[in-house]
Length: 397
Image (cartoon, rainbow, N blue to C red; front, top):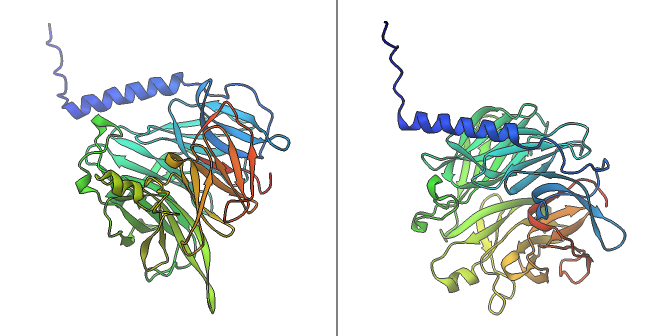
């Protein structure tokens, strides 16, 4: 009898990767491919993530009457979603799992097409955000190499969601990224589109999930990459290395006697060891193309913002940074001067629609019509516990 052929030797990484592929394939096959319940076709309202009676979901909500929110469509997802992106035309939404995440999804709220799922390759994790380029042909995702901890941008085909290329972010814990299709942002020489990336800089390990490790090694930075090649065009850091850059928004800021200057607002989260320093830490940084600086928190001496900025939006007359740990939205002038805090329980998700900044709290929403936050419209409480982000799906509501 012939001896059995010798089997190839597998190292530990081969075994783990094979196991991961098997598990992800079974999850992908088993996970529901359609909405939890049928819904009328709609494009109005907000695409949002929440935790409801049916578990973790994404969906579309819209005002009903003068003071209520109604779910127009919904889809169950395997874990908490984080970043959302409304694709051109408004018929589809991209959603990505909260870090360290393993799924990316394209969903058509009108139900005319089945959801399109993608599970990330072994050894990588999604970091919670996805965007599309100006032409809608490429997607960009922030990711982490689970073995080295290095952060990467995944460049993906917009139709298939499959990865075409990947670029280093020159840091760790990359979080939100923004497209910039201006000829030149004024930061470095050379024209062409750019990707801006917020490297949160917080060390973690795959075996401990979201647990923060060795914060003395924090290295948060703002990075500008060439959107065609991934080449590094610039990198900036704050003096306070315990401030983690997380979410970003663009706005044009008026300049006396000159044309408006494009400024990047960045929401931050403090990671100081000293509780008092963490409580008093600022939550907003501004980058004007040359300098990255922090902005003092509103009424800092008596009403600290707990050093935690959840989301950021460029409003018609300034900036808004949600602060869920103090149950409010911090408001700022275009130059970063504090203008107070609009109260909203567990405020986090922000979106500007038709010039109005809408904030979602844990179970209710609020429109901020003025920079001072004293002209507000609330939508009644719902059974949904809204998550970190939402995005407008129509020019008017």
